[in-house]
Amino acid sequence: MILEARAEDCCSTTHVLKINGRAIGSITGRFWSEGLDLALTGRQRLKLDKSGWISSRFQLKDAESDEVLVEASPIGMFSSGWNLKLASGPATLEKAGFFSTGYEICRGKELLGRVDRLGLCERGWRVEKISRELTAPDLILVGLLFHIMQKRQAHAAGAAGVHGS
Image 1: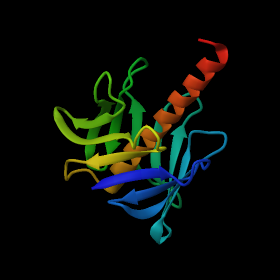
Image 2 (image 1 turned 135 degrees about the horizontal axis):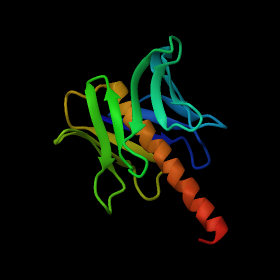
Image 3 (image 1 turned 90 degrees about the vertical axis):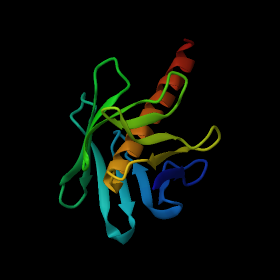
């Protein structure tokens, strides 16, 4: 299974969410936070909430019941990795390699999946499921975390350019 999000158009902040090339919904960012709202086909709504103002712990919830489906928190202060509490059990999201832009979903030494950007000229990302254990909420959480990491990197690069560093 491949889950991907592509920017709706070149100026849009909304991304179309697809599984195996078939549209299943959209992702819309919130103006003043890193939270994201998902409108899926079949009228199901999910939301990614950041718990706390300073914390970087994220929870994917059902928008109506507020039930937590899956969650993620940083491994450490100076690490780019994440601890994941997936529907299929605990896992980590770690950088695929020093020169890679992608991340790998791992449980111990077992590779469960990968996430990476779509390409140099396309805004969006793709999560590839390798293990049967991963569920759709697991893939969505990983993709949304990657989405937030890309936004943080773009913001940091823009701020560095403004200040001349």
